[in-house]
Length: 277
Image 1 (cartoon, rainbow, N blue to C red):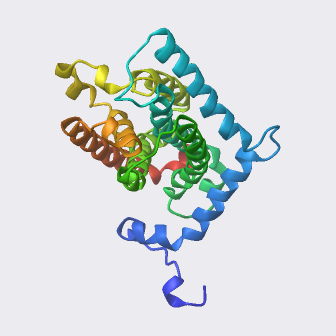
Image 2 (spheres, rainbow, N blue to C red; image 1 turned 180 degrees about the vertical axis):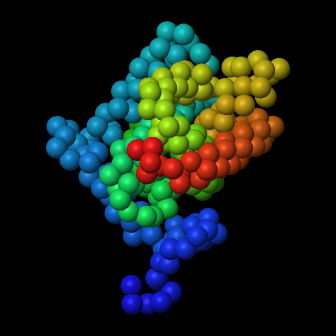
């Protein structure tokens, strides 16, 4: 704090004008909260990090049996159904993990919020690291499943990081909005797990979006996870899973709208967090 450029001056209206700069100044707090969340997730657990392997793998097995073997839904091209499912599980697990963790993060850090000044946006953003670690574990499983079935990615896989970022943005918008709502209305926290559970089945996780009739596909793409999951499959399966560009563009617009709404709602409510908590 000896460097004048690193000093934080509290004055009327400054928090609004310099909010995004303060986010950078408090970057160390971001990493502290992020690693704390990681430690809490895996500390004093029976199987620890192995749970990040077990959950997506078992979900893949169930979806493959139910949708691929029993319902006999078609895959995309010649891709094995298990690879199709896991390529959809990757973005869904990442987004749902961020939504679940970030939405309740502000109330979970009530003592910190009520005692210390810092941009409160750091709290939900810090939860993203936990989701990304689980995602990295799932990516290893996907590589093993693809190797088992002899599926090799092509150049499309280079664009996978862009779709990872898109999955994070899809989750952050609703998560920020929900975090603000939960501070004001505590019973709202029960809505999020229900919405996530419903979203798992209305999103093309266990099946291909290509089975949706063409006249309804654009409307179906109002669910932004449709574009994200299609993008993941396109990056992983390449030509086996062509990207529906109109639907993907619509998903991007919906994602941008939700992100704006989430940030706007969070920022407008943030100044009252300490009183509400």
